[in-house]
Amino acid sequence: MTLIDRRTLLAGAAATAALAPAAMAQSFPIPQGFERIPIWPGKAPGGEHVTVQEVETLRRPDSGPDDGVFAHIVTPTLTILRPQAVGSRSNGAAMMLIPGGGYSRVAIGHEGYSIARRFAQAGYVCFVLLYRLPGDGWAAGPEAPLQDAQRALRLIRSFAPRERFDPDRIGVIGFSAGGHLAAWLTTRTAESYSPVDAADREPVKAAVAAYMYPVIQMEGPFAHTGSRTQLLGPDPTPERMHAYSLDQNVSDTAPPAFLAHALNDKVVPFQNSVAMLSALKARNIPAECHLFETGGHGFGITAQAEASAPWPDLFLAFAKRHGA
Image (cartoon, rainbow, N blue to C red):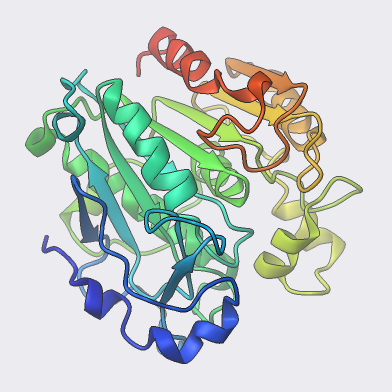
């Protein structure tokens, strides 16, 4: 694997800056201690008709340089943070982090870098996934993010000897629409792409998963319509919405799952987490769900509300009980 040049990653960003009015497109350095690698050898699959140009902007006008968001991803990556980079010792395990963004962008800073620092301090080798988006013309359509997630998890498992962690002690944490992708990755078993190299001999398997204020349902009154439109288009059939609702067809092989949601979330209703909890328990999958009084949507690692602040400690205890 080789490091990606940031100029290559963001080439042509200025041409698409208008798509993210909160900030001018610019090149942000990878935060100190992190390393970035592509997940596919060569170009990502199914991009013959993709014409978008990748762009990184600030999540908000007042955001710092570490609080970037990507849109129109053409080079899916993993950004790695090792415990040693934050002055900690490895605990022999790893975490794959899947930021959200409504399937229209990826909030790599807020739900990637900041979360990675917290879990690297706890001893985990952390991998932040930057994944392709379904509306950008990829041949796989709504399956393009899943292709990247499955490939990334296999790649992380293949790194275990080099990075000195146990491949059977990998956790997956997803946030908002990234929570939908994390649940898709960990609770269903269908293959989304053909093998490309030796890493694809690894199983798509995690020891534990966390779905944070997740988009789960694509049908009914609690669906997040923005994510659904990005994933399935403006007028999906009832059958299609049902098929992509992740409280349906949960595999018996799904890993133990941790869920957390704020009751005052006005973007993705907490009923999404409740529905997923019910689906997991119906399959006798170990699960734990925390419904916080306050926190709103996208609380991440910041203490937006005192009630939701302790979720990392709660998840770490859950992961430890279940072998991650």
